Length: 295
Image (cartoon, rainbow, N blue to C red; front, side, top):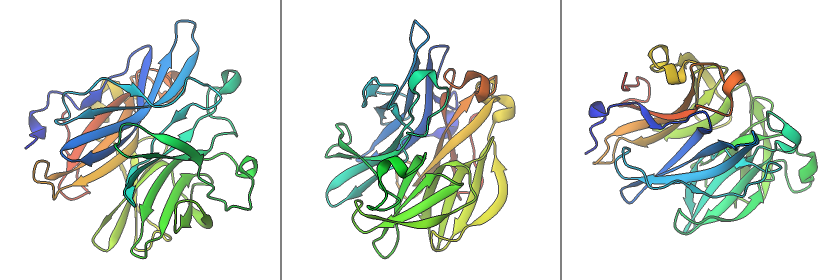
């Protein structure tokens, strides 16, 4: 049983002047946590590259060596894994490209969302654009979109949520052909889980982690609450807390909690240190409403 209160720090992966760890997405499988994230590296000449990367841990203390899963290419910059799903005997991971060609600070209009396949959660292949606007809309006309998340409803339909015009969402029967449904006001880095009759959605406004609920994945009610965890006491996260990803393991005997993974930047704001000092942190909950953490 993992004893969360005995942890020495809320930080799982700690960034520095050359490295940032952002946008965590975690999958728990056969007693192991598979942690995927955005790895940002500032090279010796000042050039910045982003990677989809991963590590594996059994106790959230000791981690395997970090592995890069994507190429060194500023025109792509695979990053921001949303979540991992299992379907028809395979694992699927959704992520974005955050295209920063020609020295751009933020992802350009070429940024799109992607789907990768795996048999073992370690080796990923066949990246393909998720054509959430439908087959008739050319990829180059889909518009800038980032931060995907996948979830299946009770009728077997897959929904893909992504950051565009608030959060937009589309649905599919086969993860290949999509029908665009609409959008709702929301921040970035959406994460959704089902708990009883309700879907709980976490998202990231300017700072902190917001919350919405729904019964149908289409119509959302805002809680009005913004969670900032231990930000006031964490120098490493005083600039911003964001990208909350919740993994509900309350029924898992060795865990017994819902876990929130997030990243924090500090002490300065992300607008100043977007590519450095970001750390991935951890909080936990018994009810999806009240969160505990190491202060």
